[in-house]
Picture (cartoon, helix red, strand yellow):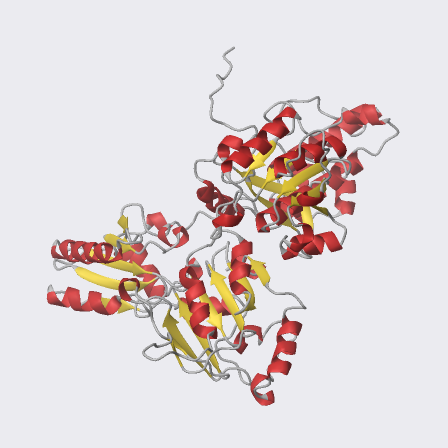
Length: 615
């Protein structure tokens, strides 16, 4: 028998679960340290944070967790160092003293080596290597941020599934690692996986766990029960077994093994949503053989409808003179395509020239026989890529082809459609513009935000956060009755916030990048990413906290837009339509924001409403 040869370069991915007497030591007090502490606590470990300066220097989350007695924060400067060892009070000596005096430590995470804007606070490499050497001498695995050579283990891009009905965590987790070769990409791959896994998959895992417990109910002791496991060693649950006769006797051992075999079959073949909705009574009925697994699922339609296929559509013969369509693909969800756009993409197109942000779900509608090119609009190459696309469209149209310039949202709303119309006209082609659903309107509504609302917002204004060739733009000033939607502004969030909030007097000769009044720091703002897509994320906060909220939320998910104004909170919970009626009152407005935020500083929402799964 041939066995696989080991191929170097992989990691041994393990899932740790600790007892409360196991300690994870975290060196540093930044937000990464808080993230590592939360991971340790969720795994059942005791978390201890070492930071020079103690509680006075750690981030707000660590202070809060310490006040709740979830973890301990120790000041490195106050650790007693035996005089016989050294008179040096360096972190390395303090760490050695701590490890000698405070019992076993399971893992060490060094976080204050993280690259950041303030390099004076960053632990230097020599110190990190010294810490790594000390931990190695104590046989303690170490993870050191931004220093792969000082790591025995790495953290994966992980996600824990929650119960959609109540938000409670489930046992199901997924983790992705690129073994240090593409950390940013691992986060994106994780999101792609999550977007394609049913949201109730974690609930299904919980139900199967309960199913197994019911199946194990018998007079056997724990060692005997251990043998009745549905985690089969063979790669398939379809291994032939002795057929059971319902009117014959069956031993308890045979019954237990049969139950586990059925659970293995159900886990493998039933739809995830069916598993997530199975009741305890149904489990009992199945295990009592009142209903066999195959019969129980017979009323579930598992056969996809193949009567219609997008690839079976007949392409129309292009006319002798080519045509050019400027088409809007909407915010992203394929259901938001107009009928005209869908028809052009699936029946008319010979060549599709797509913007890079058009999602795969829309591109997948294009027949395989149609050539599709994606714009290479990377940073620093936008102008060249734009010219390349326009030239390609004209060249194909001259050959008699029907060309589709596929743009995200609506082609006229910051889609550069105007200059393309004029370019094509100069070259003998009158482009047909097909409107699309603009993300400026659709994205806020997917986040539960109306751009206009009686009693809250009487008008809205759409602007861009970046001008031509990356130049700065002037933003509209604050008006209480107006909603501001900023496209293409997330990458310049700090500059935008400064322009909106800054109320300091201007020096002579200087102009502020805002027309009109400054915005109150407590003004509600929503950052909407990947609107209408399965991995949509909405971060709601205030102007004063949105930057920190985005930083804490992790990697960004372009495309994104910003919505600023009182309309952000208008439909949240019971709603608030009294903003204009009550008038400008800073104190009342702060109270309004506190109610909306439930006393917090930001709120993050993931994914679409479950109803969109059927649209």
